Image 1 (cartoon, rainbow, N blue to C red):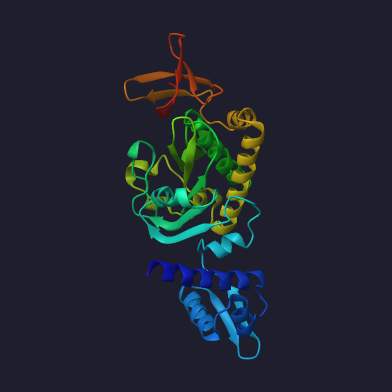
Image 2 (image 1 turned 60 degrees about the horizontal axis):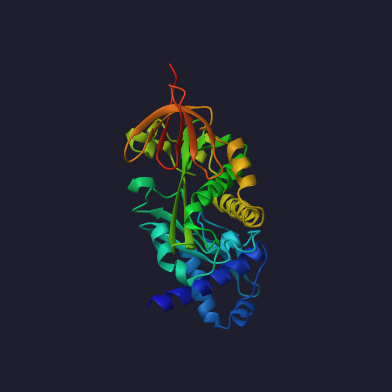
Length: 332
């Protein structure tokens, strides 16, 4: 049953890709049937399914089918139609709703190509760091990227830095003053708009795969946020004063991620780290760090070559924080 569904979805995606490539023109049912090696009746059935999903497709007995408009959906065919990458996003697995894109990505990571993306319209069990629940309603961007870098597990945090930069730079391309809060949040005007959760499977000396989960409050109404996070969170919709084209945003994000990932593979971590420092929201802030064993207060004065946060405490002592929860504090 599952493989039948995959075949049907693939045919439907292929039809949509062809209509998108010739948006505004008519494509004959006969041409589609010939190119996809299926019957014209099968083409008609999938056109009906696309219409049910909100695609406005005109049909003419003599001319064929023409795509007039698309719903706000992160369909693989939509994303691929304008995607300028060679590795990231060649394979996109789409879900209307799932528990967590990271869970699915981890399940399939061993058997798919590097660069495969899992994306969902909503998640029922989205997670942040330390097992925290992440609210993931429709209108957001919830995706996981599977990569297979040839690096030691010790350096996995470098991928989180890379992902944070790719998200912040994408948001900045829309004129938003996005900054990165150590270790894995993206902020706009001091409010959280994105969380990143990187998970790995590894041998002792090498990562087998890395799943980079990125959750962005895109076209989400902040009034729908739980009260306890409403004052500290925001969305792209709120900051821009209107909805963004989510497909266009994802295309830019995947291209940015790929460019940084290739740079990381070719030139190492130093230039990535420098970019991170330049858009850090944490360096220069008075912070509270909570680890599993203690709580530390101090000024974040920098990040070392491994991505550890360097704090100067009130006593003038330097502390190196490899992992922990970071809270920006207002100075009195």
